[in-house]
Length: 284
Image (cartoon, rainbow, N blue to C red; front, side, top):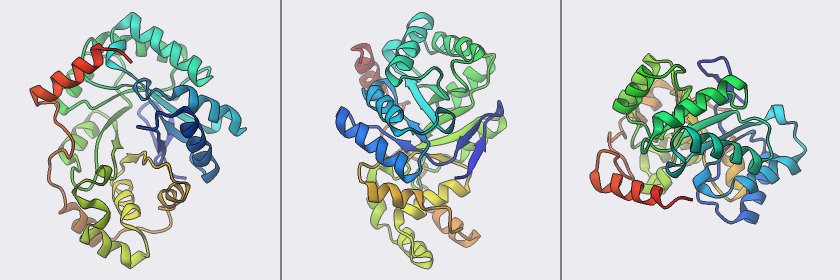
């Protein structure tokens, strides 16, 4: 496994396993155990995924030493604000059966995320969180938070894949020494990613799948990835991306796939903001 070093010196695997949309507790526990058996040590969950307890059970049952894991969770909109965020993170620790978290992110840039971040900064100073960061923060809100916070976010987890490469946002994160992390590295199959002719053409050179090429492209750009699948064979395939390297020509071909727009939603769209904040107000 390859690692990135975050802005506070903490090392994070550049490839992890995400558990978004695996709400069934038994299935999630099994999937995480499968991922661990394949070799994954970075597991990404969230309060809103409703599967922290399943992730915790899998970690506990795996027998793998705690210090080999890198566990991430995220504070949901309904838990925003200093006191609520602090209490929710303590609850996440309980559900995950952990004494500390490797990374905690603000899940969405809504509600009192400044209060949330202050709570995270305090827990970071006590050692209950090893690194803190944000998710879905576009450059404007990201810069604002950086300018008025004591601890620079170690991570900004944003939609990043071959069709939305976040090149400008990535450069801004580099300026402030924040590591970019991708959610949705396969764009959830949108835009026919798995049958894309360019990805297939490049993959044939290395006897690799379109998924492996899509991941390798991001890895070579220094992007942390957390692909999600419930299929163990796919977990193995996604994990097997360190034995080949794309050429500059390959990288340029794939860079040309960038549309510069989201394949999902925009936080600048009022209807999207209304949907997310209304959903967030309902709680978990």
